[in-house]
Length: 247
Image (cartoon, rainbow, N blue to C red; front, top):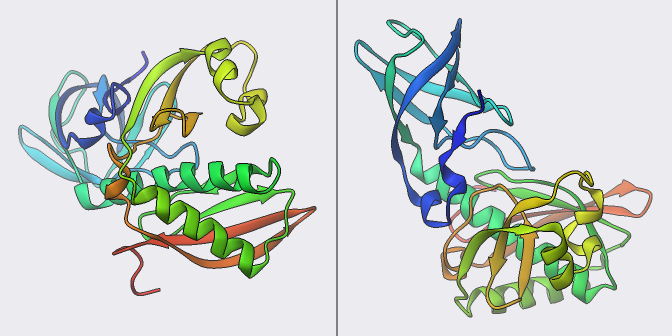
């Protein structure tokens, strides 16, 4: 049975940090719940951390994985069994950092596409202190990156709202080119998708990740470096105000 993904309901749901759930299955330290707020590794975004408590026990979350059934790897599962009720608590500092980083990634990807003749995002990794985006085809000069940062930070300062909804493939393709949203890479059988929208048409992209409700929460972006990944692909690493300050 698929796990209900509570963060998917709305942008506001991404701000929830506590939930109750029932154990669907358990195998050693691996736990599947009927519902969860813990985001699993996927879509380039790292997993949430936090704790689970139950009658007679408590454990830190080590790792969260899965698409339909979400598996939570725990430090211990003492006194837990199928049907047990648990209380979950999200590590908010890590969650919010991922939210800020992921919304920033959408902005950077959109700006690079518009600024440099349809350059596409071909990969990304969202972490709490630094993140990266792979672009193709392009070779960034420092001046190009400065223009991207200036434009992105200017948009962040506009404090536009962010929301999510469910749209059909046809509806999405009417508003954005499929190569910008990577819709052309999704299986044709997938028709309805959760979409994250920034402002009134600034950006729209299918995404199951966690995001901020307003761009003002992101803070300014700072480029950490660039690296060639071959065949016209370049990787850009970045961080945000207040994150990765030790880097």
